[in-house]
Image 1 (tube, rainbow, N blue to C red):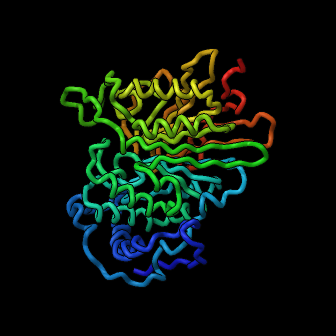
Image 2 (cartoon, rainbow, N blue to C red):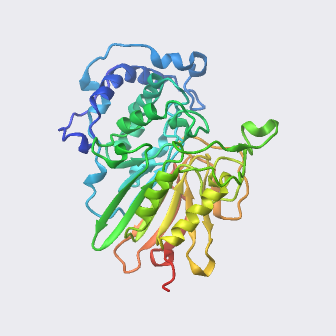
Image 3 (tube, rainbow, N blue to C red):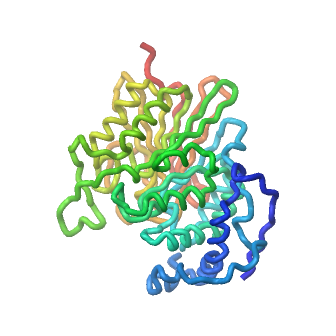
Length: 407
């Protein structure tokens, strides 16, 4: 099957070019991924995948022509953004075997930056050849390519693209999965994220005396095992209970020290990308509420560093919502968490949360932060948008409203 693409001039890895070994992998796997596409059923699931299992992704095929290789097209690099991003879109939970029409809606909304918040594929394997094959399926999707070829992307992982459902530091292939993650997302060879264990990192955008900071957290590589709830329903609902053990960690000490340093740096607005929810009320699913000492540590760290302008964005749960906490009362500012978790996935039931603002969005959707940097007190709109482009939840705040009071 011929997949025609326009070849563009290569500018090295900084421009988003794919490493050599990935071009070889894609040459073998893309024909398999493309062969899947015509077999998508009315429910959006690739027909026959479950019956054939992972082996289908391990079949060797001839490389074919590199001219038809979708990875030969350069992606716009995050470093090419020369102004402050004013429209930041984000999403998570996109199954590589399902249609992704919501990504077309994202492209139509013309964001300056897109944040992938995890479960960007459903890898769920210890076979790294299979993991690469599933990334290849995502990379071959026209909807994904329409986004990746037009909008700079930053990404974190969650459990399914990390490698196993709900996995933490015990996952035995985390080092290998990390390299595949970096290569697929075209993280430059000299990027600081490649210099340490895990995938956490920072990007800063500066213009006209303003600074936007994006902090990418790794909630998998260093996380201790969670405490499970007993009961027959523990597989899919109320899986976990809050574990009071103060020795357990979610981020690990090295990542915590790095985060403290970055929060002390100057920024007007800080977007913290967490693959799991931070701001909601405990509901039994994976989130920061499972390790309450770690959640409190984050709240205390933000206050200790006097880090103004913190906003969380998160994924994982297969629905969209906006949460608002006020952990410091009059001595601080509200902490928002915008959860966008439904590029292809949805969930039939949603637990209540006293921190929820507005409605839950169960249909496929993405999140967006819109900032007006042109005014003295930049306005900030937090939105959840469905695949038809309808804004389903819209909360307004401002940079000045996200500041600690002056002593």
